[in-house]
Amino acid sequence: MSTHATNTAKVTTQTLRQMKERGERICSLTAYDAAFARVLDEAGCDFILMGDSVGMVVQGHASTIPVTMDEIIYHTRMVARGASRALIMADMPFMSYHSANDCMHNAARLMKEGGAEMVKLEWGALQLDMVARLTECGIPVCAHLGLTPQAIFKMGSYRVQGRQHDTATRMIEDARALEAAGADMLLLECVPMALAEEITRAAKVPVIGIGAGPGVDGQILVLYDILDIAPGKRTRFSRNYMEGAGSIHDAIGNYVRDVKSGAFPTPDYAFT
Ligand code: KIV
Image (tube, rainbow, N blue to C red; front, side):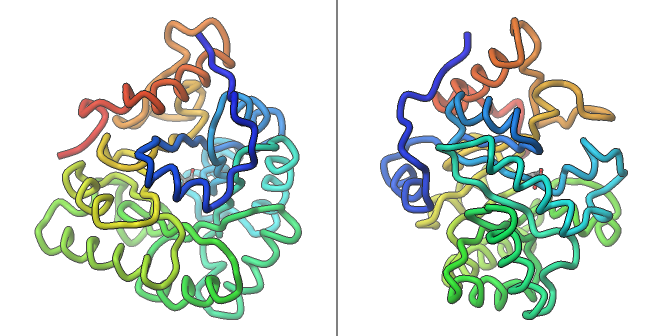
């Protein structure tokens, strides 16, 4: 059974913060074009991410590294055209935000040319300064911690992050520092659920999880994973919502319903 959003008021960073304060779960998916953005918007996704996962699930690359600024802008523009209620977030692609000049220039392009309303960057020590600078310019930022796919060649494999005491402590400190620098949202990918819950409890800004368990403020998954059309093996933390669904609309509506009610994710889709 699919759901339809009844509240049509435009979602802003303030809306998401108020949802956290009220204990209302935030729901999101990635989208790469206007047609799917419209379906997600109508199903009640609160924000839509035009992620650099476009490189893997749409363009057929083995990682997100080859995705360019122009490609992100091209897809973000389509996504922004398709949605009217959901907040539009766009990924800053690999090496587009590692110097202050590049970061400001590229974030501005994402907003002016792409129609993004929040930019997401993957965490590294350099990014604290970038988050502070973007904040000063009035650009909403989501900081992506835990598994950061743009660092795949440094990490060696896609695996859970923060399992050791020292890495967990560092992630808690990083999350705190990023919020203090002005981040409007934190996104935790592949993080043990107890650690994700601790970071969420300490943060005033919404914490969104992907493979981070049920104890966060909201969930995001890669759209093509829940539709079971992503190449390769499905990740352990994702769920095939096409199973038992009559249509794509139903599958997406059921995902939104489950995130909002807390039925997804159960600890079966999380890490310890
Ligand atoms: O690009 C993407 O799809 C992402 C999600 C994994 C959150 O960053």
